[in-house]
Image (cartoon, rainbow, N blue to C red):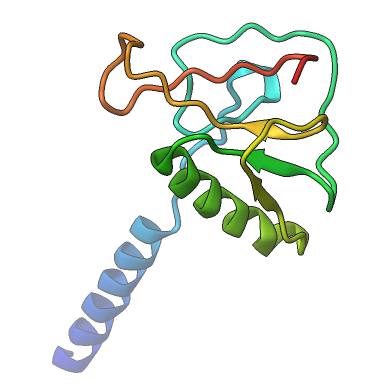
Length: 118
């Protein structure tokens, strides 16, 4: 009888432990499928698209922006295989990383502008 009680207790404990770990967080979409991390406080969606290609480059005019561009280029290389150049001048079809110290946002804040212009 003692062996049966122990077996039931062990089975109940294992069942309880496995049921606690299998719950998944509900999948949530925000900004109607535009998933930017960290999630922006506000978003205005416009028409258009940006084609990322092997000839795309990053414009980074300051040392801080260059550090960010190098990090971002390395992350994108992992998923695309492209070696992105870090340029000293803005180019058509490029990504400009500009840091504005006068911008009044918190330390981790950012502003992302996607425009048809360079």
